[in-house]
Length: 168
Image 1 (spheres, rainbow, N blue to C red):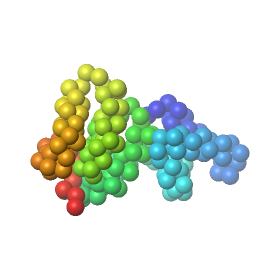
Image 2 (image 1 turned 180 degrees about the horizontal axis):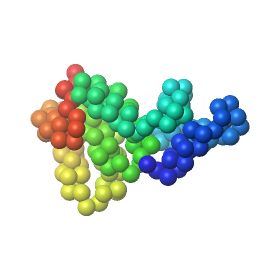
Image 3 (image 1 turned 180 degrees about the vertical axis):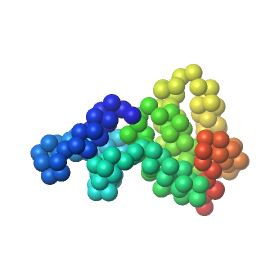
Image 4 (image 1 turned 90 degrees about the horizontal axis):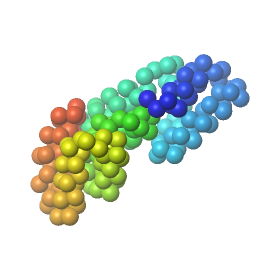
């Protein structure tokens, strides 16, 4: 986990709710979450309760993302993976899974961004390059290429721990 996140989680867990220290820590974490595209989680009191209780937030949301993706709920799974990436910015696997879900949802630009982020974190990973090439081909050829590549995406998602059904 990102060191800043680990510090915030630890300090928030031991701060007395309602105190200035608690509010300050929560404000700092809210700023980070908002900057990383997860403002909706910052507004969720259950999220804060889970942190305060010391629950493994990243693992919980990662498992939830896999469960949602397995049931074809790509948008909800992508939302959970966005949080996982925000909380653990060095997680290449989560970025890859998020990119693949975004591609399935027809969001090629967002998928490309996540693949580029993964590539920056793991420049030697040839699989990321292969995913980028497939994405570019699919984007260049339009819907036909996207439909033709669904079998590949299904295989890839199954290999990394998720196998969502094709979206409608």
